[in-house]
Length: 102
Image 1: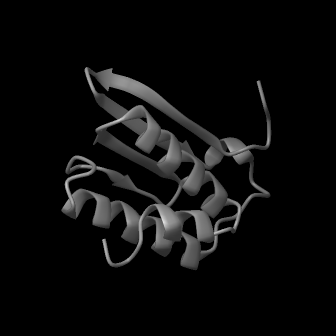
Image 2: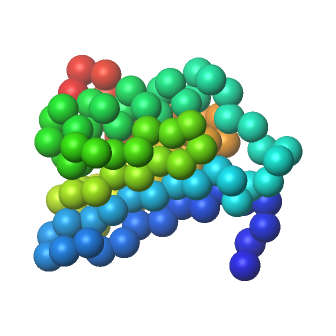
């Protein structure tokens, strides 16, 4: 099991529905997430919910993020990778995956 790493996963929820999860507690006490990063991830998740790309009731941080109802495995993987990058300080993949105009 990896230590000192952010846990990110996708799982099959139902036919053609996926869940994206990210947990920063697994990264240990030394890993901090800036408020701006939390705000960006939260805003992206809320845009996904508004656009019905994720179900209402998503967890929007600050240490645990989860979205149910993502409609394809490919999209779930894209969102998981974007959130993972964001949690390590790179917001560009998140901005591409969930643009503010969406």
